Length: 69
Image (cartoon, rainbow, N blue to C red; front, side):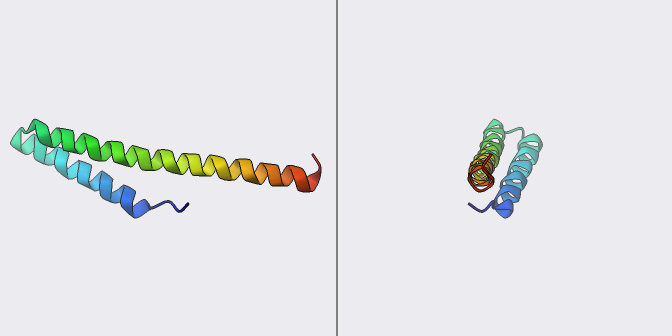
């Protein structure tokens, strides 16, 4: 799995812009949209963490087999 930093950056920028607009227009729906974009960004980071964890497990298992630990 390849981490898409551009997608993360895009979501963070989207959240930032929506939060700025929410403040400028005093619009609660824009706060909600900003929060949803942040939730998507956090989900991307969570997927990446799971991917790294799986890779570490596989590498450890491989090392144990080859080194006879």
